Length: 140
Image 1 (tube, rainbow, N blue to C red):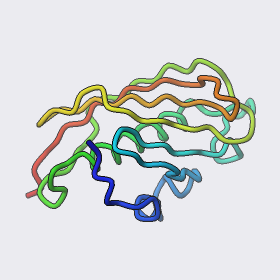
Image 2 (image 1 turned 30 degrees about the vertical axis):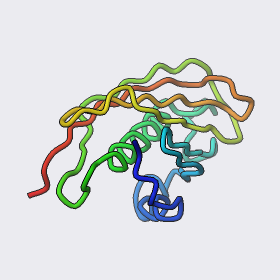
Image 3 (image 1 turned 135 degrees about the vertical axis):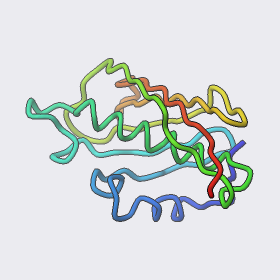
């Protein structure tokens, strides 16, 4: 399903000089079936009450789903995928350490893709569940 010819180093290089780098998001595992990334819970990703900001979780989920869409394209030189809708359910707080997102496909169609990202803390507790819909478009 995923184009696994990309290395984790290449995926992480895509995140340089943009929000992924700013928030410390790092891709740590890529298989044919799923993508895993981690994000620190620190001053960059916390809200004023000292908890992981829900928006940071959404950034992690959208970033992962967007990269997953890219990795599923037959020819990324001719097509790209853009986000059209995202939602997130914040189920538990996190105060420190890292959170881990695991992104898997719900549907990979020719024009529409739907991705689920489950975000857990270091103990494996579910923190957030997010669903991203992307649209595949031709590059002109």
